[in-house]
Structures are given as structure tokens and as C-alpha cells.
Length: 569
Image (cartoon, rainbow, N blue to C red; front, top):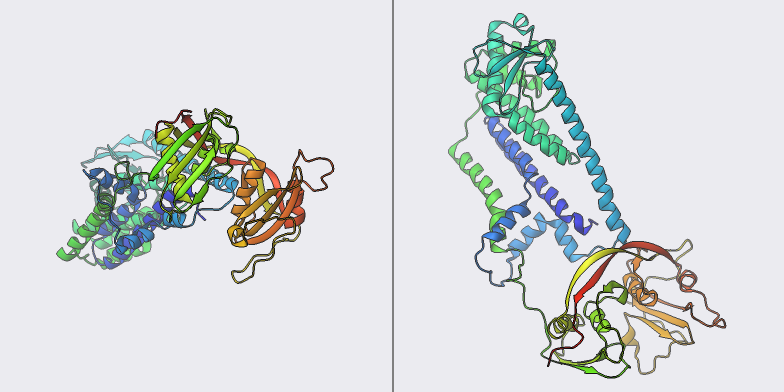
């Protein structure tokens, strides 16, 4: 499972991979056309790694001048979204249930590995740059009638164009003695072709892509294709300028035999690419077809779609803003009264569309945001006789369990002027994992009948159906807690343990099913006569699980401001 905080990167890499696949198919279709066309296609695939589609979609979202009406997305757009952003869709449909330390440690480990790769790439780049500068410092100017500055170097380096803003052609000292004048002219024509095409600039752009995305194998595949098509494009340019194929091929082979290749990919030489295929192509002197109008139009349409498509998507379906967010849920009618009493109800009562609860602000906030007390901080009035409230409200009888919670959030904002924000902090807690022995719980199949309740459970008016799918905790003897789980998942069990321990509990069991189980344990304040194990021992003995102290991230609700006196009804 991809961690949620890595899904944007995963989606970007997936989109870039799809782009490379599309370019690959296009270059195969254009294999009989000019190499320069294929080169620019591969360069576009390289640049795509630096431009996420989400950026273009964000630009489109900013272009809308009024909120779009709330309409359902067409099925086609949903399918496109699932293909282009599979990891985001997966995260939205199936929230990650991995242990918190895995979701925080994994991104940090990956970040450290990535930084090491980037640092290594920069080191290699700086080393090559230092070699080139040393070669240039040891070179002297040659008075040749060429449109760029030419220098002669004692190094046994192949002829190459160095630099981007002010390119310099560096030649080895002995090249004039080793090549014929016709071969030299062909070599010069090749290097000047690199200058006109700005090949050093485009090679530097891809070098940045290599350093940042060094871990992606297609980046290195693109590098090979760029080098191959770059040299073939220059070969085509040299032959079109009138050079003899035989002479040009001999010049390239002599350079390969006598001199070394350039130490940097962004320094354009003459011996790059698949030399055998290049020589065969030069000697065959097959004329490359120019693009027909139809292919030009198709490439232009594809390029426009690659840019305009995400922008249009952002324009048509912009990210939710405050202007577009539907209004928060609220009760149809709500009454809040401050009471002068000390007793409270531990849970709200719901009957039909009526919601009633006598409690304090701490319980109201915890219920509204589904958070235990240890996850809430801020200046909240204490639970005494001055801060007890009676909430009576009405809503739809068909309201789900979560809807009254959202309605309570609106009530806290409107009546108590509550201002809050969410944050994540490291906190001490417990991790629930598999024990060393065998598991003492069996996964329940849907068709399995429900086992009877344990003898100690005094259900009273409660029916089995009412507690099915829940974890029920009962305080029987002084300091002794009895817990039964009725076809519940491990995340549900962890949530129940959080209420008992008043600390976060993370599910590290890896168990995906639902279970029936029972256990009894003694609290720390239990009398000495209570002959029951501690909670961690009971979990190990009765369930085959293990509860260990653990530290990890916890989402916290910080109350910045809240008033103890509610506004009038």
C-alpha cells in the first residue's frame, strides 16, 4: 500500500511513465522520418518528469471565474481519473491501515535514499565539470574561420562543443594531422549542427531529470534514446550539407580510434550513440522522410492535448474551495441550556429524529470529532456543576451515526464560538500485534452463527443484535473490566482499548477479519482481592495478541478558542 503522503509522487511517476510509453509508440510510428522529430518527442517525455499534471490542473482551477455547479462527473472522467491517478483513487477508496511507525518511517527512509542518489549525481556532475574546465584552461585558441570560438587542447579528447550560453569547440592538438581536410570539414559540420540545435542545453535539462529521478529506469532509457537520436539528427544534417558519406564515416571512425569520449553527457561530441547503426545509416544515405501535413497536425494535437487536457480538467472540475464546499450539516432545531448540576450522561440518546444529551464540553467535542480525551487539547472549561449542558435537537430519523457528529460540530461553532485546528504530534501509546504463540481467536465467516454471550455479561434489556459488531466493556467487580467483542475488526478493538488506556493504540496485527472474543482484566486501582491479570497479560492469555508500549504520530484536535456560555437558542 502506498502511504497517503507519497501518493502525489506515485501518481506523478505513473503519469510520466504513461507519457514515455506514448512517446515510444509515436517514435516507432515515425521511425522513417527525420531523427530530429523523434529527438524532440523524447525530450518532451523527459521534461514531463519536471511538470506534474497536477500543476497544470491547478492552473486550470485558477482560471475559473465562478464556482461550477454541483453536477455529477461523467463516467468517462471517472475512468480517466482512475487511470491517471490510481494511487490517489486507491487511497480514497481504501484508507491505509498500516501501523503508524511504518507510514512515517517509510517516507523518511525513502527520502534519505533519494537524497543519497541526488548527492551522488551532483558529485559526478561536478567532477565531470571540473575535468572540462581543466581541459579548457589548458587549451589555446585556434584561428579557424568558424562561427564559434575554437580551442586546441593537448588532451586526447574527441572534438566536442562545451558550454551552453557561449559554446566553445575544443579540438585535440593532433586532429589536423590525423584527419584529412574533407574529414575535418565533416567533423566541423557535425559540431556546428550541435550548436544550432542547442543540444548542450537540452542535454543539461535531461541531466537535471536524471539527478532528480535517478531511481526511475525509464529516465536512463530516455537518455539513451536522446543520445541516439541527437547524433543521427546531426548525421542527417551533415549529409544534407553536401558531405560525402564515405568521407564522413571514415572521419567518425578515425576519431573513435584516436580519441576519448567527452566526460559529460551535456558536452556534444561526435562518437555518441550506436556507432555501428550510425555508420550503416551514413553509408546507406537513406533520405529521411519529412513529416507529412497529417502527421504534423497529429503531433500538434497530441502536444496541445498533453498541456491543455489537465488545464481543462482543472477548469471543469476545480479542486474544492471554500466557495464550492457544501454548507456544513446542522440540526433542524437545537436547544442548548446550561445546567447547575454535577451528574452527566456518558452517551447521547437518539430516538427517531430526536437527539438529547446532558454532558460537558469535553464529551461534546470528543463525540463531535470522534476523538478520545487524550487527543484533544486547549482551553476547554472543566466538567463541574458550572459547565454542564443539556442539548436537545431534532434531525432526520434516517440520519447516519456520523451525521449528528457533524451537526454537533456546527453547533459548537455557532453556539460556543469554537475555533480549532488539527495537527499531528508524536505521542506515547501502545502497539497491538500478534503474540509469539498461536492466535487464540478464529476469524468469523459471514455464515457462522453468533456464539452466546459470556456468563459474566449482564445484558439486561440489551439484545444481541444491538451489540453485534461492537466492543462492549463492563465494570463489574471493583476495578475489574470485562470486555467482549462481537464480530469486530482489530481497528475496532484498538479504538476500544484506547478508551480503556486513555492512550493511542495502533493496530499492528495484520489481521483483516472479524472476531468474537472475551477477556477480563484488573485495573491498577483494583483491590488486592481481584484475582485477574493486567490488561496486557489478559490480551496475551485470552487472545494470543501482544500489547507493547509504542510511540507514533497521533492526529490531535487543538481548541484555540471556546466560550463557556452558549449563545441564545
